[in-house]
Image (cartoon, rainbow, N blue to C red; front, side, top):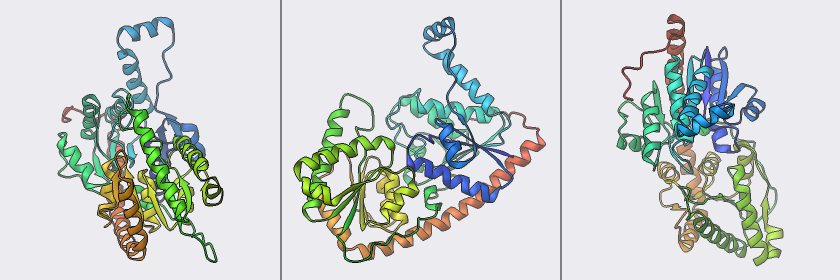
Length: 416
């Protein structure tokens, strides 16, 4: 059996790659005989990191002046048709295509013929090639552009198996017209990953705060992005300065390689304002994976972050966390685990409220840790249940494709 994995992997987002890693570990244990291939934007990185076959999701490109001119005259239709054909060729011999987690069905910083169309053509290629299609513990919404919404809705409708990482995602898909009655909700796949070994710091020490910094400039690309970005960095720097004035240590955290420019700006602003405290109390070490990020979080007493997997990493390690959310997924996760009231939206958070949330979380950290531990145990059990469901689907795929010699399936029943 050959199993394909599809998503935005290898691009420097530790949360996305953590979902891929969790699925690879599961498949190697549950189906050791399966041949794995990952379709992603950066196949060289994925192949190197996870020792699996990998292939790019894009088309090699148009060759020749005439072909390029024809594509321009067709407003890009020729190129899009060729990319679909390319995806179909890549899917030959693949029995199942699995999307392992991530915020898969949203259009954050995307245009319709970017990631939304990419999802549609790979989902369609999977169905045309006769492969089973599974979206596993995915996030969904918001999808702001109507064309993007159409692409993603039709992709979801093509699935043989769908599950969501939170109830909000399932409700969103229902609102845009998907039949979700039989779709289960299971936690984010990163909760399946092993925790790093505990890092101990002997002797007395200061309170250590993990402060997640995101290169955020709004959900949709546009002229307001610079203002949103500056407002966010200004208030986050003010909060960091307040932490330093309280004599807390700060470790700056990221979740994507693109966040490093924002970290440097925060550090620069703090260095101008209070250079002595910055030199002695602020640390930043880039990370390449969620595992590396969690090793840093393990040394923290509390985390304040925006990236979803900054929050997941803190919860896995039973650390109190306050979220500056750029989407409802952060707040949904915190509420589900019992931390309602520890989140604000990143674009309009109130600095004084953030300070009060931080103080409350720190003061009640023993009680909060116990609450988080109970929630994480619940998540682990739920994901084990999903493992069984997914294994049944995988075995069905192998049986059907062997019996049918991999013939393409009839798409007449699909609502597309």
